[in-house]
Image (cartoon, rainbow, N blue to C red; front, side, top):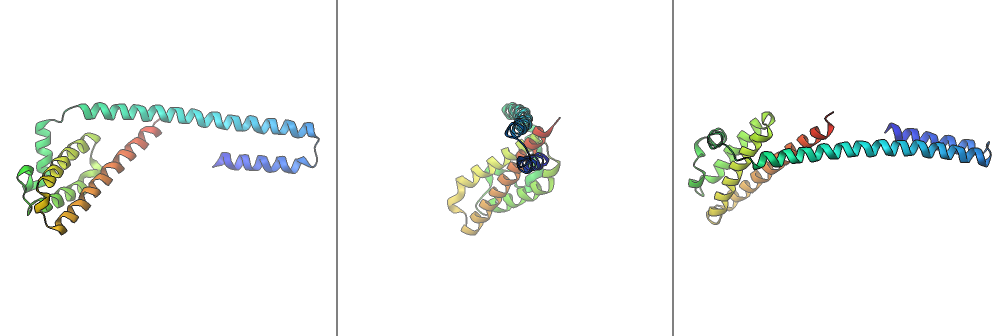
Length: 175
């Protein structure tokens, strides 16, 4: 913002002084302003290169983390925390799958702000299992329950993506 104002003021000064200057003086002023603009562009390019490297590092760390298998005991504990009495995901029925999704999302909403990216990995694994069971029994689920489940699925994806974007933004801003 400051640089835009600076450039705007410089251009205004250049226009006002054009009436009281010679062509050579105006040419020199244009060269000076062009050098200032080049400096601003160079600084912006350097900041973009740094941000690009940080984003690439974040992506690399994320990919490395996601390639690491989840700890089975950790996943079991996380499943119990998030699903309560609905931990037997593969045994969920058309009557119990919607309450399981509701329980899952209530816990996600309550805990998500304290989660690390690894915690999100566990939650995503649980979500995938819920979604697989949903697909397996979908044809027997009541329409209103299916709509509610789809809304909850969308909310989970939005929360997870929001966290990814926040973490990427934080990684790019790091000194």
